Length: 232
Image (tube, rainbow, N blue to C red):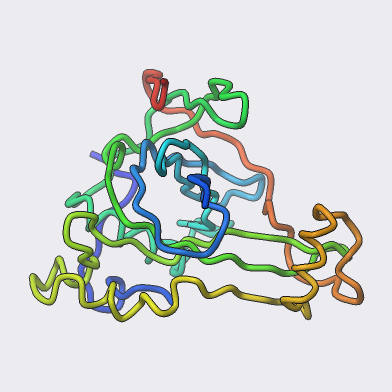
């Protein structure tokens, strides 16, 4: 039987990466992952994004978890972060996605997606780091998922596999939870001004390199019978 993803318990793959219920800042958030879903870019790379609930709010976190590259080779950075989630879920192999619907966006319109049901309805701490850069002369903002911890005891994937020191990595990482990354010559002052001006285009000064915040446009692979997740 084919599967979408096989968990890895090697030491290297288990290590962590470096006011409102909506997740809008860097931090480590207790969330319920209602459903992870898969998309495929125009060029063929595969990514997993997360439809989560934090407090009373539901939202999609497009966390840059690219599992495969355009040539179908493994994307080691994204796969490593996703592997943490799989280990915390206590899943050996993630089954292929299923056709499903999620209420995405402010209007909660039911949208066709491909959900990884093995990882649905999972409580975790999710570490998110904001990254600012530039693209075509405009400032970009990304939410990068840096890692996960088990919600019951704050254990990392590495600690779960080794069955020791539960929560130690969480405590070690805590001072860095509010870190922000600045790239392409964009500074903290640039971002502060950009936000104050309600994020206008063309405000990145001489910084015009980098990659678009939304990445490549993606399509939904189709698998099996449709289910619904996240309805009120």
